[in-house]
Length: 489
Figure 1 (cartoon, helix red, strand yellow):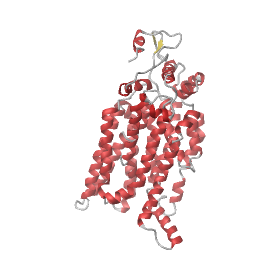
Figure 2: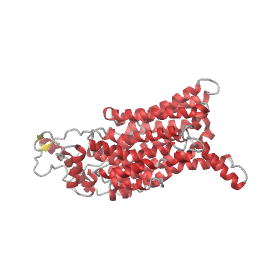
Figure 3: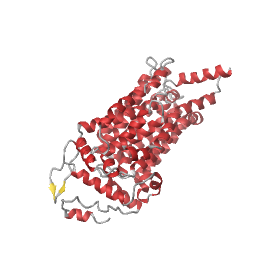
């Protein structure tokens, strides 16, 4: 709602967290993101029982035990099937999101999520995009981090259920794997009661009446002219370029550095080693000298730290900004990986080094939870305008899941081959990502999508073309300041 008008133009006021906006955020994030986190961590605790199952089945059929290398390969393939399915699911994001919209796309993915891993790639990629589109710009960062909060909560729930006296045993692990369908069913029932993305309805469907009603429900006030004006400007700007497919996005000069940036951030997020910790926590802590009886409790403790850092990130992202959190997060992860490497090398000669190893992992989790985990999807939402966003998230989601798959597949062999030096590779990746962000990625806090596009225009060597979008709606006068802003930069 506009509090005042200057030169006839509505003055925007900061958005608030209404009940509808809060519930839409929580329900959209719960079913998909909780599932993602749960599935990432659920395979760690029952790993020995699953491998025993493989070995027993092989022995009964071939009357000899399975070779260790084959068993390791089979286990790593089992772990990496979830991110591989997510990769194929992410390939469906652009066509389905453009055709169905965000909420229908999420619901379509959830309808099959109990049985098919690709649904995780579809729904988890669309959720941050949906939240970024329904949130006011002053709350966009905090709301887009909520999916990461549910991811960490899903990880923690899987770790708690994986305790030996709960479900992480020879009889309970199959039930543990099957519980993932419950959050999907809850979200599938509740999500239809919440509005579609207003930007999708206006820019891609051209339905201003439904857009206005959706905005009024989400914002909690009737006068939404200022946001409608900004959406019209974005619409006019995109009409000059046309709606983008994935192939046209890759060739679009005006989006070159945005696309490179989201790919680098997603690769850095996944190749930094965080999923190696979640998938193979027991192996890592065993290598670090932690007693076998204590490993499960250390794992739950690090999961709790991860949830705590995600909660903190929700509250500080709008105050500190995206760029600072990314730089600090990747820097901490780099230092923690080096410290873990040193601790692993000295654990045979220094009795207290296992505690340093545990501390290194906790520091790493703190750093990753601060920036690399939650922030890349937020920045990715803000760097692309409406019709380019589904294609951009399809590319980003594909990179995310493919990198996740690579870590899940090769880390057991990496750990066996390099031993304590395996985390040095992750340290180098964190450092390279940090340098790139420092040199290229701008701060996007509280910027409109057009303002972020303009920030990249100089690097891309293009001019922002708003067409008629820089003119105010009919019946409103243009201020002298607006006339100056309409001049191409």
